[in-house]
Image 1 (cartoon, rainbow, N blue to C red):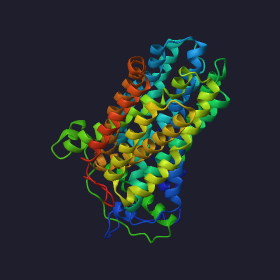
Image 2: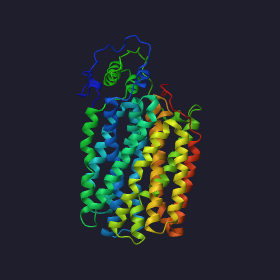
Image 3: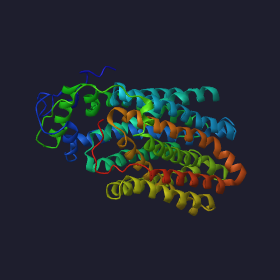
Image 4: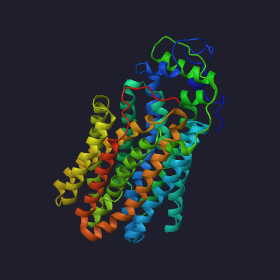
Length: 462
């Protein structure tokens, strides 16, 4: 995928309104400052929706396995241990993918990696429909995870680098809200399509959609201006900024060249004295959120079946619980620019811990749904805040690497959680399992208090 002059997008070619300008014209503002001053416009909307659809497809793919697991447990007579491996192997791939995807995004571009990851996990998901046994499914789930893990930090980085600073956090929370759309789509597919017969195979076929959407990302979304500048591609960067200015009817203000291209990212810099504290804090936050979220929600349909509810009831209750994600995101989107990143993230994680404890004690349909909806709302609101703060705390040339590394460390918890949940259930039932999840929510919330506050500030360039 050559990123040079192959896209019809005016943000890349400069054939949109206001495009013909010399990249190196004198001016008083950097391109980053010009982007930060803009109101939300059509170009921002297209970027947000375009990236959000990819995000939703990612969520749909992650969520589908939770419904397919419940059906495969019946169809293939799988043990809890075997189901745990099916769930966790995807997160092994996601851990590898997140780390490699972040590094690649800082080297070859955000958009390039975004499109490539969609293609990888879309094709692998379709191939999973042909699985003839457990080993084949596990191998394909690992490949799916490679693409899934790389996409999310790269997409959030791309949107963050175009978002005006006064609404940057809100835009990332809205982007993350597309996760709920994808999870709801998976719940609907699970309810109407997945069954122990051939329905689970058709669910995988539907999951091929990201492969086709990769073309949209590759040819319709712009590359990051900050990345283009870091690579010395001044003319493309100037055209992209002017395209966003034209979409908001804001007069263009050409910027001076930014200087020599930045050196390639070095993973060790995450542990330099300047970045060490924020790296430790963000890694712990990612670890805690991943452990609790995936430990609870990947197993939720199966746990409900094990508690005596049939497959249809289990999927129905999970769908209702999932609906609560939307108001959770909405509240987080409002508070993140009012309270700030740290306060919003820590508060939502604390409330997630309380909801997890209540869910562990729930023993009726009403209490299961009520506590589950509360946990779903607060947990996903926390996810939105986490994705907003992560790219902000690193400079441009390390942003993909830093975000990807944090996500990769979080996926270690996502690997461990599905493996651990059956053990917790066997030892102490739901109260112990969800008590552990509450602990990790608290751990993440405490770590969030040590993050730098970046509300309303410009992103770091160097």
